[in-house]
Length: 465
Image (cartoon, rainbow, N blue to C red; front, side, top):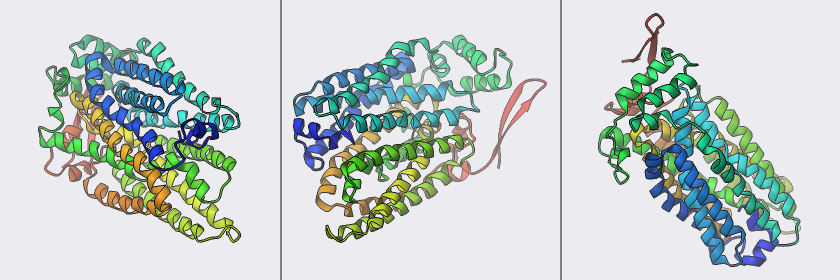
């Protein structure tokens, strides 16, 4: 929608304007669909499996694409955006949960964080496709990119049932032997006595409850009923809130920010494409380091960098706004664009890998699907505010709106410093000890050791004092 919103024939068809309240409604209704979908996502994934959640979500996306790409009125377009959000909410609960639960412990962090960088697998082709179709002199300029959105969802519909189900889901639903067969085949190279397999089996038997709240679609009590649970939910809430309120919502209006810095329409589309590449490369670098990077340090330092880069962008934008049409220093505009690129890179390094990984690491097994649903709901609420208010604010106060996020990112940095719990290098079940501690933040900074008795194949986790 970032590039489509700037297309001539899209604007002629719907007359929404590039900024303002009409655009805000079109953008933000997508997040209303996410809010609604998140209420069903957890129960669907707990009842029909992680594959079932991906399958149902993909059908919602296809339905949304059909409505939106055939729209002749603004009302139909808005309805299609709602359906898209509804379907994506369900799919984005099932997919990261599936990856986390299927990954071997030594790959879990990297694979789960890699999942969230898949966003660039859509944003980069989308930016390239819209750059190409922007020259089409008809409604197909905006319809073609929208139709292509259905391709990944169609692939999921066709092939998801050929994947094995999550072993944790199978164990939680009484299919113990199937779960152990999965672990033996994919984590132990066919050897059921492999220490990693034995560790996971022991963790399953100790931590997974066959009568947990995941068996009751209406029961979200495991998210709040104990201090342990409330600390876990706090981490999920903070990631959902800060992950969408750090200024990344400005990215939906990249082309308008580039326009305000003096770039031509064609260059706006090119910069939008280049920005997607830069963010993707930065995020992939972060993913490659995920297994070694402390979560606390990344969140605190990365959010502080986001604050500084937005402050620089606001300063350059303020200077550019003082120029007249005949008296402009192009270097100021370039510096403003560069600082915005650097902000996007800092955000991609910090939040793109951790938005899926950190909440999933923090949540315990039987509450994971519903906890991720809660995260999606929080993301939807904050995104709704972003997408509704940002076009109105940019139209009315311009660059000054960026200062809101400068102050907010400074606040986020302080909160992460005092409240972020370190999860790097911990098994999912070992974290139960940390979150049950009197001070989970302090406890999370202590080291632990996994001791393997090679002769007897016994694995013990010893927490440091």
